[in-house]
Image (cartoon, rainbow, N blue to C red; front, side, top):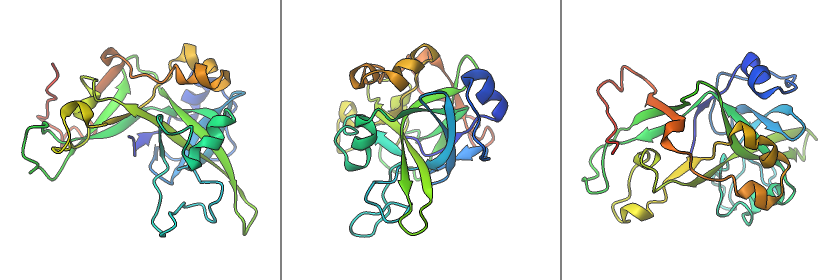
Length: 237
């Protein structure tokens, strides 16, 4: 899963994605319920809320029936066709690309067999090895505020299982109650440039075929804070 990423600037968006820029400004980073940029079919970039708003929600910060805040910034690929929040956009083909210069994941430095005594993680940053921005698979929608009538664009980033990936499966805290191959570690879904049209305009089956974990060579990675992460080395095979 992903809860923090860097957003490319206007120059990068135009140069790499050749999009019509949105008329609104955005910040350098995005976190859940913050503002980010997504690209929908037709080469249109929009600024919206990172965290999808269910169609029945009465407010832009979605909550459960018990009043707890819902986490909707990541959509599991296994359930996005059936989950109430995501199934409508998925069925309507409202897929998008989420540009990201980099994204962060928590590395705990412990294995499945280690005692769960470490209480603080190192934030690990992932860039593309080729220096370009990521284009992450996402879904988008629009929600109308029932009080003000404001139309709020919103989006979510798709995630997939990465238990078998030699790099990505090192992220997130392992669950000692589950075997190593059943941790259900989650990762974002990068879409390569040659597949953008298929993700945005293809059938559901064609789009779903693009949801796969990329090879390790696609990544450049290291501690998000080089000072705090000094000396941290991943146990890559």
